[in-house]
Length: 497
Image 1 (tube, rainbow, N blue to C red):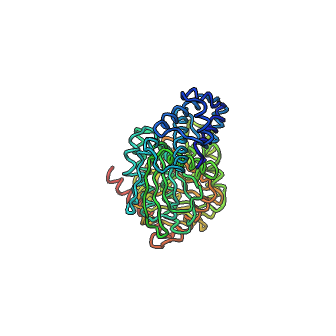
Image 2 (image 1 turned 90 degrees about the vertical axis):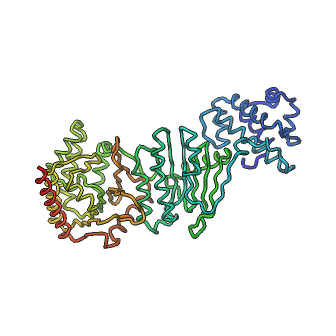
């Protein structure tokens, strides 16, 4: 339909709406001979009258549709709109576009009133030095015009320069701020081509986009995007693109509010999501992760590896585990029963197995000093006595099980990403669970995409085998640091009391 002529489109619309030329002629106030000449291409409406003809025709077509013909017409245009007014506007724009295509074949001087208002007032912005204006300064005006925003953004993070990918990650905080008085939906389309380069930074950025600002309706899809061009569209508002050369330099940015282009890009993205998009993660409330036995499935898996960005239920003694379980989930007997089974499995199997554990030292020391932890993604605060009980059991497990390999992360793994993000990721051979920032749902992100599942393994392995200057991996030194932190906390606590 891209280059369809005016008469052909008009004929198709009449066919799809089960209407006749004579009926349209009466609606427009023209003799039927005019309609016939438009359809067979022998003549066209005048340039000054085409706008009113397109508008009246589109309204006539939509009003003639029944439920079946309505769906048939939408399939023909490959669009998904529920509102008849929006459908009429889309048909009107399509008629004007086809008129321009047809008229330009015979006459290059087109009366500017022929263009739709959106087209005539469109913006084309080209500036090779601008790289960070997508979804930023240029679009602020259009974002503020609407109380409802439907945004689709497409790029391959693994092929962007570090500062560009970090900027894109930061946009989520801006959108979360805007969401206070707007309804926002964001879909981010990406791919993993080039994932062997800088895996740690790229994957941490993706995880950051998934687990932060959890109230925002934000989804990430693997759509096999394999280039670094950044394309974004705000439905019914604006289209923005940033085109990059092979050397990662931005050639130009282009912004347009031409409705036809916006619609075509938006619905093209919709088709890509529908046909080949794979949602990276499934968000699941912690209580459902327990009731649906996802957590049990995880700890029963092979090749367990943990990145602990906060202290949690792991390494707790059995009695403390159940004490906190009763405190947090005491009203739900089904959950308590599941937690009992998890506790038994952790104590009898997991803590005697081969596990690799990465722990952020700052978070471990913070927990020892203030008792703040996460219990199945529910924030809790332990007493000093409970913390001591937990830490003593952790020390005992580390000493007695030579199969448990543990490293303390002394600093942030990332130097390029200025963020306090310290994610908790639980990995097994077939299942990956990422703790989302606690909110009213206390969600976990269950990895669903096969490629992203492999990327998470690469993230852990490259972090584990990374710069030795960032880690403490001698068990004796780790135990010594933990012991000293506990002693200091006792001293401070005694002085305060």
